[in-house]
Image 1 (cartoon, rainbow, N blue to C red):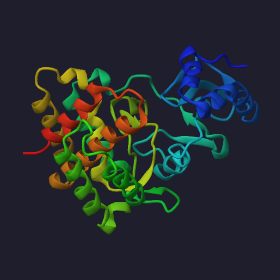
Image 2: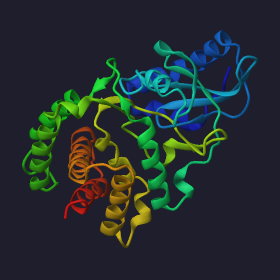
Image 3: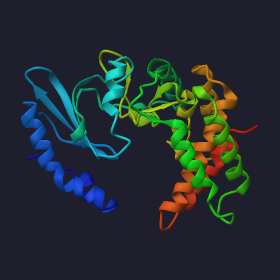
Length: 297
């Protein structure tokens, strides 16, 4: 039986769904190892909501077995990876969707955190162009998600500790953006940042861990702005803008549309912090507001 890392066991404190998943995880792992005739080949690793075990098999050689928390974000990961077929993304070898189990090619552990952030932005922009392909009908649709989140944003109290001007701006922009029929025309990753790109042998860099949506390519930029936040200390506004324009220009995205989605996404993040946390993190709220302001001229 696989011994779970302490950090994976600690996920159980996040709530009943997490507790149930962590409790079942050793058996899930063993069952999948047996079913696919896999042999563990290294210490388990983990993401925010998954465990990844290096394995070997007679058929595939070195690979990794990933099992994710069964939620709506992980439901269609296998479909996105299969659609990309290894072009710009980690290659899917096998999938057992109802267990959220994926057998993936083994990549290096080196990600984009070690690179200058602007160089990393250029790499990610080049990957956008490879993974942004026509949408899949099975995926969650961005307009439906944003419609729901906009309703939640509208319900935010007027005295919430974020500028009301930005809240109302995000409501207006979100409503306008999802009225465009192209808003659900493209398969997007939706959580593409520095740690979700790994070095590889067959291609220099490959995308991992999609939370796929049928959406708008311009939606992708925001996570590259709020990750590696501490590095921007002392020049926050200029640092955010430099990342933003590097990504949008290198990927040949429309600046106004990309800016609108950054504002919408950061205000959604602020809303979730205020409504889902017993004690909202003031630093996180400040970051959300700062990014929304920084991308605007």
